[in-house]
Structure formats: structure tokens, C-alpha cells
Amino acid sequence: MATAAMTRLRPELRHLPLAFAVLAMAAYAQQGEGGGRGGGSIQPRIGISQSWTDNLRLSENNKDAALITTVSPGIRIVSNTGALQGSLDYSLNGITYLKTSYGSQLQNSLTANGRAEIVPRTFFVEAQASIGQQNASAFGVQAAPTLGSQGSVATLDNPNQHETGTLNVSPVLRSQLGGLASLDLRGNFSITRARGTTLGDSRGQGGSLRIAQLNPGALGWYLQASTQQARSSGLASNRNSSAVAGLNYRPSTDWAFSANAGRESNDYLSGGASQQRGFTGGLTAEWTPTPRTRLSGNWQSHDYGNSYGLSFEHRMRNSVWRLSDSRNVTLGNTGATGGVGTNYDLFFLLFASLEPDPVKRDTLVRAYLLSQGLSPDAQAAVGFLSTGPSQLRSQMFSFTLQGVRSNVTASISRTITGRLGNGLNQGDLANNASIEQRSYSLTGSYQLTPVSGLALTLSRQENVGDANRRAQLSTLMLNWNSRLGSRLSVQLGARHSRFEGVTPYAENAAYATLTQQF
Image 1: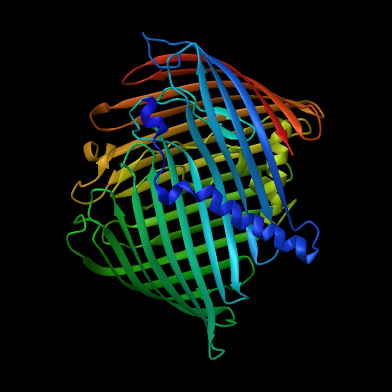
Image 2: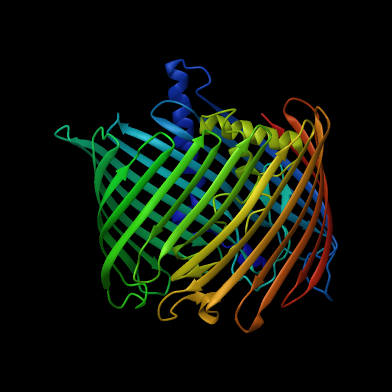
């Protein structure tokens, strides 16, 4: 198991953090040369964590108590203005174990997004990248991460978890056609790789062309053609292509409607063997009575199953509420859906009226979560590695209540993943027609002093498949966080987890983390 953990990511993703760091630092340097103030920042850091667990092996009968030391050098880079804009947060986690024979390992953690303006107002390149831990199976051993102020690290001996990296790159060309219409030509290239397994590996490429009326009034038209192909490891590729014509209608600033109709072809039901062609058409509506309230819905007809989405969001002065329900097709891995799954997502919405700029808001939210002793990563709906097309039904309700010194964050989510076509999927969907995942999370935090806070998180993840296959993980976490200086912070925490499934276990842990920012 230690050998698998040490297997490197494939070359395509191994240099992701370095590539994004170079781009972000170039953007920051560009701002420095321009003399702009507040255009960006580079903030290195190093974290040292010491933890103890009474069940490193996650076993009911073969417990292995251990001391775990984690050293996490990291960097956060932000560029707000200029030709290169975006943010990057990366850490390299070196993990060593004492009082056990389990070997050392390295883990990467990356969240990055960027936008480069190659030709002003004409040619852009947008990119997103992430590296994190993902479960291979929804019914294998589940384990809670060690949540820290800078991210999550999986330190326990769990063969069901794999480090998974994803990269998406989209070149965009924008132009005008004789002053009558705008042209938006977009490419899309993606790659996903998992460490120690080929399950979940995939490549995708495609593009879209959209021609829309310039300066429309209440009524405007558009034409759009798109194609997307995805190839999963060991399976035939899947392709979807469509061409539609649509109308947009905006009778007032509060209401917006859209309708489209056209033709579509795909090979989802045949497992890539043949194309099915047919009609596609849909409707979209959005109501925004105030800047703090938004209700939107969409529906689209497909021969493999209709897709839809319904979303309600309301922000008050000290709270944010969100409800969503959607169904669509995904090619490959499943994960957190519904738009909001973590503390970071909820507070990012909550602070929208305070800081409209998304890059500046990102910095504000992370600083606030650090001051409250809350992890940005708690608690996302947990997915699993998969290949082939599947239909995903996702429902989520979440809210955050913000008081003078206390906060309450809660989320409930339900995801049903069903395979499409001739059953050519790999992983859990090869043996289960559908998998239902339910996630519950409640976090309460209290600011003890201006520099310290206490947070308590209760969470449960339930997974149910065919033939009553089940897995359930319940976790209780308590964290105390304090700033020892303007750039030095400390976190003390304790965790209790109980898993019921193929190999049930109970685990208790305590940990301390010291983070120095430079």
C-alpha cells in the first residue's frame, strides 16, 4: 500500500503546480513592472503538523497506533489585473510515520484557475487545475481527511483513496461579423489522471462556435454548434455533437428567458459503437428580483434522457441560503456537485455583496476562514472514480448563518449516479446500475478572541448501491485555531470517525498544526 501511495502522477500532471506557478508569478511580475498597487500577491508558507491516531490501518481488529508528522511547504499566488489573471494555491505534503512500519509518502494539493489575454479583447486562454484525494469506490473503506487551515491531507492507510489531478484548458477567440453579430469560438481540452490506478483516467477535447446578435433589445437570436469527445482508459470514446438556434428574451432587468431547438447526435447508449441522432430543444428562465436573490431553471430534451436544473439562492446581510436540483450526463468521475459543497463555497457567496471582484473575494474568504478556525474543504459531497457515461441527479440544500462572533454552516446533499448505455462502465458502475450518495454536514464556530476561534463539525456520508450494498462514515471534529502573530497561526484538533461497511472500524485522532506565512 505504501508503494502505491508513492507512485508518481503521470508526466501530464506531474508539472501542473510548477506550470501554474510560473504563469501566476509572471502575471504578478507584470503588475510590478506596471507599477500597479494591489494588483497581486505572492505568499509562500510552510506548515508543520504532528498527529496521533489509534487506528492507522483503519481496521477493526488490527489497529496500529502511530505518530504522524507532516511538513507542508506551500504557496499562494493571486493576480487581479493585467493580461494574466487568476489564483493558485499549492502545497506539497511530506508525511512520515513513527511507531509503525508504514512508509513515508508525498501528497500534492492544488487549486488553480487562470485567464491569459493573448490578444487584447480578441484571444484568451482560460485554464483550471486541481489535485486532491478521491475515493476509488463508493463502497470501499472511507476515511475523514485531516482538515487544516490550508487544506486537507489524507494521512491514514486507506488503499481506497488515490491522488487525482485534473487539467482543463480552453482557448477562446472573440470577434465580430460585419458589426451585426458577435462570434465566440472556444476549444476545450481536459485530462484526468489518478495516482496508482488507471480507473478514472480520461482525456477530452472539443469545441463550440456561438454567433449571437450584437446589441439586442428585448429580443435577440443566437446560433450555436458544439462537439465534445471523451476517452476513458480501457473504453471506447464517447462523442456528443449538437447544432441549435435560439432566442433570448429579456422583458425587464428582473426576468430573462431563452429557448432553443436543433439536432443532436451521441453514442452514449451504444457504448461508443454507433451514433444516435435526434431532436434537441430546451427552455431557460431566470428571475433576479434583487442583487441578493436569484432563481433559475432550465430543461433540455435528449434522446438518452432529459436534463434539467433548478437553483435558488438568497443572500441576506448575515446569511446565505441555496437550494439546487439538477440532472445531467457526466463522462468519468463523479464528485461534489450542485455548486456548493464546502465552507469556502458558502462564504464565497456570503461575501459577494461585500467584495464583487471574485479574485479579491477569494483572498477575503480564505483569511476569514483562517480567523474562524474553519477549513475551506469541510465538507464536500464525496464522489468516486469511474469511467464511461453516467447520468447524475444531484440535490443540495445549504445555508450559512453569520453572527457577531459565531457562525453556523450546514449542508445536505443527495446524488444518484446511474450508468448509461450497454454497461461498459468500469468501477462501481460496472456492478451497480445506480449508486445513491447522501451527505450531511453541520459546522458551528465561535470566535473566542479577536485572534482565536473554536469550530465543531459533524458529518455523515451514506452510500447505497444495488443488492443493498452500503457504506457509512460518521465523523466528529473539534478544532481550535489562533494567530500567534501577523503571519504565524496554530491549530489544535481532535477527530472521531466510525465507518460501517466492508471493513468496519472506529478511529480517534488528535493533531496540532503550526503554519508560518512569509
